[in-house]
Image (cartoon, one colour):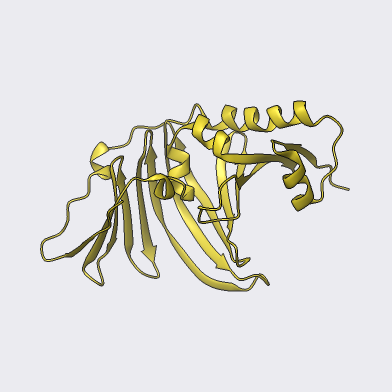
Length: 217
């Protein structure tokens, strides 16, 4: 039998009802869940990895898959390159987010507002205090891995739940579920944490002849 330890952050009643959990010392466990997540993320200044991404429907059937490479640096900088089956680039320079589709020769530019910064990848590059204040945190230990599930306090998010999986303090997976029950799984490999990253990766130069769509706040 697998032993699973679960820790919950406040408000406890909603999270417990949603996950079917029982517990005896809620106040201590609530603090511990957020503190454990902070301990994992606070030392993370940069992160580089290759990734494989799958999108699954509510029944677990695969709808789409992709692979690529990503680079992250605090505060607020990200480069996410999808290499297959199509090419797409997302770049955040800390002020704006650029979504570039070379096949369409189109780039969408969006300011870094709260909704954008609450997308899963950019959550990792933001403030840890803001993260733990905006989400209820559930902690589980499964087969030697630490799993933190974030449940948003606000309805204005792109997901219902987000899970971060750590193996020996290294982030290895992200799980997301939206309001329709659709799930996105991202597995990371060839991981480098707190290594040197060329800052030029976070500057996006709009290619000549590209259509530019600017979304305002």
